[in-house]
Amino acid sequence: MLRGKVLFAYIVVCILWGSTYIAIRIGDRTLPPLLFAGVRFLIAGVILFVGARAAGQRLPARPRDWRDLSIVGLLLLSGNTCVVVAERFTPAGVASVFVVMAVAWTAVFETLAAGHAGALSRRIVAGLALGLFGTIVLVGLTPADLASADWRGPAILTLGTLLWAAGAVYYGRSHPQVGTYLGAAVEMIAAGLVITALGLAAGEGPHFNLTTSGAGALAYLIVFGSLLGYSAYNYALAHASATVVGTYTYVNPAVAVLLGWLLLHEQIDARVIAGMGIVLAAVILTQVSWRPARVRASAADD
Image 1 (cartoon, one colour):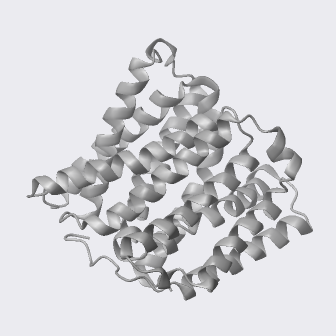
Image 2: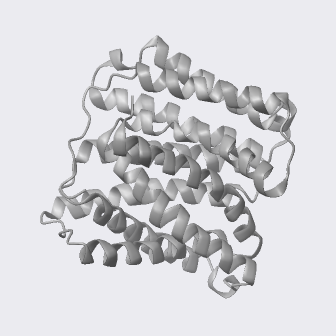
């Protein structure tokens, strides 16, 4: 079960990343997806790098640490970019169900990496399945919604969840000797450079025109999605199981619904309340049941 600073970081991720769905949707209306994502990560990475260095965090001394951080950043943030691209073809409710599958893939990959199947107990499988069911109830998704979805969206989302899960587990196994926040900065810079280059190669440059709404969405995602949210995720991932931390994907849709109720006066009915209750039960069941073979030691400079 998560406790202390790790629990706080987990809650930060749940709240902040639950609020980014609408910002991504707004930015997608006016900004090309690859440059939208790449510029966001690059700017946030540079800001965080400068801040971490000013706070005294040291650069990685080993070449392998630079390599591992770059690989983690490319895997995780390419997975996130897939969500940005897929939201052009997929309704938010359908997308959220595919996104929560990342925690299931993470559990599978973490179990394979640990070399023993005992960690993936029946209670863990039940918790993961319960979380998926709760998300479906929460967003009111029907089989017809899935059947009518543009196939490009689910295909891109599936790729994204696989990349994200692989990155989360790789991070926990690679043990880079670097402060958590400087490590997050290097990850974002590496991914930002590659994704921005892909966007330019795809011809998105002439279409990158910042409107007021697009600039606002980009600024929100840089500050709250990347600087705060991604840093908190890296901190939690450095001190706890990737599967347990990954249950934030169950909470994000509930946060989005609550924010819609608080800020946009959207209605919350019995189905939504039931979905939230199921999701909460799934998160608790998964967290109390998981017994990882190995959890990474504290980072060099937290």
